[in-house]
Image 1: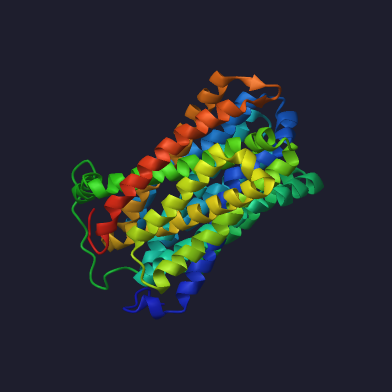
Image 2: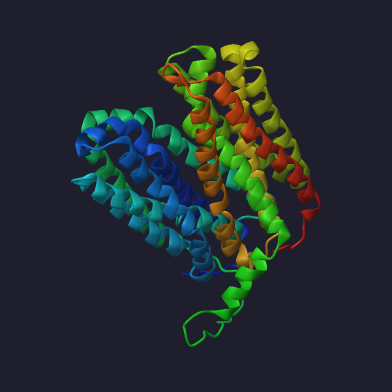
Length: 426
């Protein structure tokens, strides 16, 4: 089989590549939130406490974030197909180990292995999409990929709770591990890489220590770019505030602000990922279909995102349940549009040969943003104190104002991205 074609964007195999990668990415988001609905099962099975369980869950994010530069480098070096396939086998092994774990220690190792494995999916997926699809299709495909991932997050709530209650959480993770093994071999055997450009690859000489000076130069080239750090800072702030709200504080805030029960509040919280599922492909298609300037589109998106936070912080009592539901949905839609549009800007301003490396160096930023904002907002809430079982509304306001301050900075920084179109900045 010929692995190279001068017209990859006309090859129907690109849809096989995208479909397989999309299904694999579905499980990345699934694992990201899967432990939240089986907390009580894990506490009972391992006779442990919330602190140990929180540490176990956090290992996913730490390993995922720190391996991204390596994953990006390997995506350029050996191709996205191998990275996704091999790393998926590691994620499957983590699922099996997690399902068999006799104690919280082994469960933590399994969770860490899952994080390590699924961390090898998104960056090579971005690389594969940049190779197989036209520039004016890239944002649309990234949006569709994000929708498939967020669908995994939705399935990891009530459907996962049902499966764990019906078959047990251990059997459920064995099943997920088996599916992941199948997907790994499908990726390796039924998809192929397309290499740019269709000319002999020049292998850069290695030093005596085995390092690659050309690779180091590429890393330094990316990290020396002011454009890269602006994009990373914007990604840090927007994704960090959104996931901090969705993953930690939205449900208790809605309970305190609206006086509703936890189950109803959690259902309202689900409007955020539903919005991402809608917004990511829509804005990707919109910018690609009408050749909109992605810098100006990003400014518009972040302006609306900023307004949703202002509405939630200052007008929650006037908005009520219906109004806050709309705010959360719009917040998700704009975040989905933000992700697909921002990656579109990265694709337009990054030379193809370092796309994987650039994505790998950029991708830790949103996860570090989540880590920082969760800790800082938690400290603000603790300082404000509780009112009964919930934090006070004044505490939520102060914590959310801190998020809003970071969002406004990101909005201002986004104005510097308007002139980047067509420039190879890294």
